[in-house]
Length: 215
Image: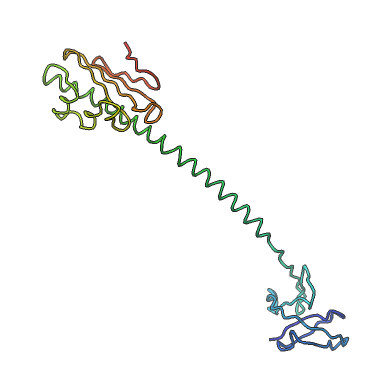
């Protein structure tokens, strides 16, 4: 392989054999003695010749001795700065994701619990209509469940200790003629924020506050 360099004294182009690199060499133009440093360099994109910087010199650009094309050397990227920015970005997004994971599940659970409570109240209201047609009076949660009109989960959620999906139900039947049902969160603000009410005169839903049946 032929390596082309410049004499550091007269700057004349010289063609050296591979074995002459890294050894004492005399310029045939000015007789200057120097040691050509082996630098594999890069191939010239125009002529394909190997471009090597002159011995002992650090140049911002290198000229191909075969065709004269000037190539600028790439500056070193500040890898430490890029690494610091990358780590900071990853840490920032990790904090955002962690905050999202902490708040989102609790909010999602409350919305899911409230949907269950609202559906449970509606289920009891519809079951009371069917039970009244069958027996001529309204029934308790156990009686509605025994008729297959409501599920066991709804029938058993009668206190904060036995709450289902964070809600418990209170059904009151007076003389079999009227009924009222309330759905409340077992832990206010934790399992839910809304309360639901329904009665034999028509369903009324009151959210985010004490249950007050509408007249």
